[in-house]
Length: 356
Image: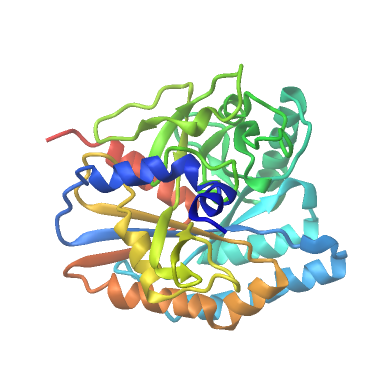
């Protein structure tokens, strides 16, 4: 297989130009100690693989039983341990499952946000789906929160099958070209779907925290956007997009030649290693003109059986051992482990600062 064919099959052509340009761009100058703001978001699907309620419940209970002991082994510079953000799928709602996750989160170990798989949908149905589910999470399970500015129930979002704003080339797994507007109007504070490589839903814009504005006449409006910056102001028509790292890993090569795609996935098939963590930090994702913080948002599918075995059987400990040993010395680096909501709030705090 030729290099060109391999690149096209992996859809690298979508974002390779941006990646090369990023390498030549003058990066933010950061002052020590640098704060690493770390967040692990989970596309948490208890019924993954079409299993029944009994098996799905076992998966939820295993997380609730084992995660606290893992988190308690580590403490960031603020004395807070790792937190897990469960993006729970609307279509897999189960009162028992959410009650158990709610108990775990209320004990300080994480948070629950909204995940959605849908297909051939429309604006009206999508709006109702999101509003109904956020009200159930908030009123019935004590999850989510009231946004301090809008005063409505607010939520973070991850799109199933990566197809945010109808971005799949074949039009499947969404159907709503104005999805960003629907998210804004139903109370979404930020989207955490990206990166989605090697899917063709991947955007040209990479390694960024930015505002996207919907164009209802076409899909994938978040392909471009306006970088969030110190002293900036968010417009009512803009949705915050918080991306994770996307890079080529030359230290991990396919057939010893081609670099593998680093998309911030943590799984049994893609375990954590030292050079991957370094690559996440090296992308220096953050708020433009800020000299103090790097945002590292990585993702997993934590209810997939192989991933449960890996993550709760040592993978998460390996991940946090790498992070805490290299990025929490208090001199060069300070590590903060946050939920998706806390990551969003941190970006807004930096944005509200005045330029020097």
